[in-house]
Amino acid sequence: MGKKGKTARLKRKPAPKYWPIHRKESTWVVKPVSGPHSLQTCLPMTIVLRDMLGVADTRKEGKLILSEGKVQVNGIVRKKDDFPVGLMDVISMPDSNQYYRVVPSHKGLVLSAISKENAKYRFARVENKTVTSVGVQIALHDGTNLLIKIADPKNPVEVTYETFDILKINITDGQVTEKLKTKEGNTAVITGGKNIGVQGKIVEIEKTEAKKRRQALVVIEDDKGVRCQTILDFIFSIDSNEPQTATVVAELEENTVV
Image (cartoon, rainbow, N blue to C red; front, side, top):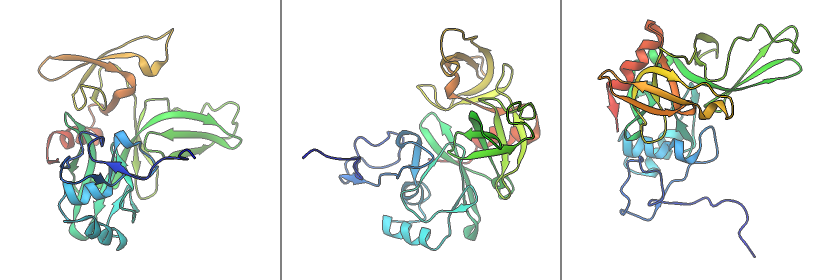
């Protein structure tokens, strides 16, 4: 009889290359459960606590810390040691006054230490919009959704959010406090591909007609004048020359935990 469904196990060798684990130390590694991020774009909580932050020596210790409700992800207490955290998620440990944001680097996803004040909000990219009977549902890159109620669902002129817009969201009440459009001239960071972690100014966004907009080519120029090319699906705008969003640039450059 053939195998049904997916396996719950993961060997260390085929695990994502940016996970900071020893490939030959043992055979198995924790496999993240299905959640807001895919296997290739996430970090399991065990890896975060044991291998990146060093607050636990073993997976068992990590489970104990999580079971006591001492770790929050985007303001929600998470108790599963295989819960996946991903791009721009905020990991908070209030008891020890430690706060981190998951950011991209040339090594893959890493943790950037942030202040308690900066940990009060998260950044999310708009992936899709769907018109419902009561309003417009905004799908975000971290698996969450925003439902905006409007007077006339058939004519949602009040909803100004577009695909690839970046929303600054208050973790406490879930309210959007700022919107940043992805356009030429803005600062952005590359979140995938061989140029992951590169940040710079968006010089050009290809005008698409015969292909999906997600595959549109984007040219990024860093502060040294070096240009690289990626696709729009790998672009995450982080700065609009405003103090609120400019803080993310500093988070990407300093206090990185690998």
